Length: 314
Ligand code: TUI
Image (cartoon, rainbow, N blue to C red; front, side, top):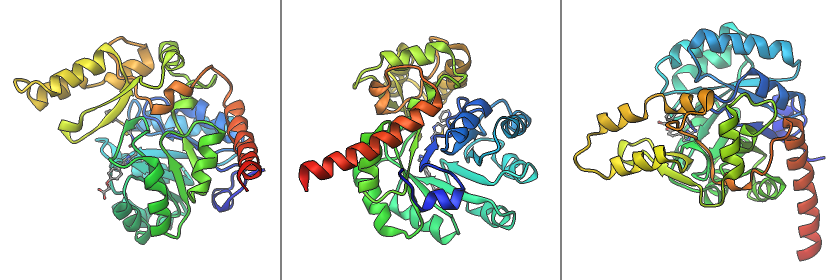
């Protein structure tokens, strides 16, 4: 079986972390991934701080394995969430879309393992210096809010720059992608998009259908002009968003108002005017299957492809 130092640090069986996807990653999905030997995450972008507290409590009833919470630092209630996770005894945190440095002393005093998501070498070095236990290096193939660099050049540059374990994210959804990430020096992989299609994922059936129908060219990045690039499935909504960005007569405020609440609408209602955030690996998601089968397929697939490739090339 594939193991790495991240398994020891987090107390998990396999080096797979489920992405902490906003509105999507709830207790049911997190528990299913953790029960399968990976690390499940609950997203703190949900219907408010108390709703996230309820998800954490629910997750504890669904699994006795380690699980974590992902905090999106640009959320208006990020500060409240940062304290609530301490009250609830959460042991593992990932963070995104900013620097969690100001919370890290409090989290460390409470024995929490901290894994910031970053998208550049400079931020990786800063997070290591601030005391991060590991980092997720996320390439722009990922879904949702993305950085500039892509996974293939990002991971080795980060691995060379820090000594803490690096979790590779962005574009990884099967054993081949995981094996490639391990070859680049990653200690684990984070997988988001494929877990949206997990049986246990409570995202709307329309979201899952759209993912399964997606091809290699089904995603688009919008929001660059607003300083907040987001990758999502091409839909009339995301194409209109892109058109508005290119229209000099439309203000950033009007575009933001158009996009407000669009992710929730997609995840909870399957609304045609929703934002279906997804990574470039959407075209590789072929069916709805239990989270445990996804974890097994990635780990067994990586093991197989590493062995076969060594046989073919060495
Ligand atoms: O955060 C993400 N992906 C996300 S957050 C999100 S929620 C959302 N909802 C509605 C509209 C838009 C977004 C959806 N997807 N990924 C992790 C990530 N973090 N990628 C890049 C970064 C990042 C960027 C800047 C991390 C740190 C950073 O700056 C650090 C600093 O020092 O300021």
